[in-house]
Amino acid sequence: MDNKEKILYDDGVHKYVMFSFDDESHEDSFLSVNQYLIVQNGSGVLIDPGSGAIFDELYDAVSRHVEIENIKFIFFSHQDPDVSGSITQWSISTSAKFIMSGLWVRFMSHYGFMDMDRIMSLPDHGAKLNFGKEYLKFIPAHFLHSPGNFSLYDSRSKIVFSGDIGAAIVNSEGSYKQVKDFEEHVQFLHGFHKRYMGSNKLCRAWVKEIEKLDVEMIAPQHGLVFEKENKTLFLEWFRELQCGSDYMDELY
Image (tube, rainbow, N blue to C red; front, top):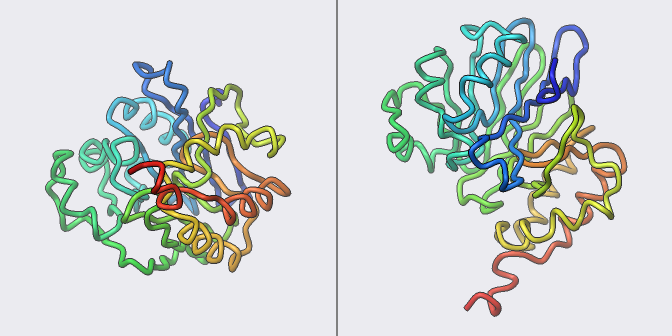
């Protein structure tokens, strides 16, 4: 295992793997991108597999943990190319169903994907998917930052994949991308969240949903994961965050 992947949870039956493959042509931008894989009893769920530029590397890495033909679902938190740009390549390589907000189904053809019967569209209020003896819960995260956006909770590992919520503009190296000092880390959170998140009201709504769950870790699509006290500190910070339309007077 190289420094581009880390097993976040493994109990012998259920595994949650974090990958960190970036488009090397944009490595100077320091926007690290994370992809995730959940495996249970040999079946896989791939989360935000990213752009076409990283497809080959991610394919090889995923195949070390699960047979590619056993990937049952691929989840896209929203429509951005760093999330779903490789949908056509994964549709050719797997027989997986694609899970996304119903708001973005019609846009997938712009990535060259035309097999709409393979899409499971999520209603705005989310959904729950049984996965073995456990479940995956799709949690509304609308306008944080996309108008059709979801986080994903895995009930067995107790990990929340938060998408762009919690994203940090950092150039992180090493095999475990974990927040060590939240107060130090805030500087890498604030600028992104102030502009990309919709409003404080929306932040509070998301935190309220997350606090209903038994959560051990929050894992974003960019940057570092939040565990233990840093998870709590992040939720407290995000609950009070002024962002988006809260700064409308500065933007117009």
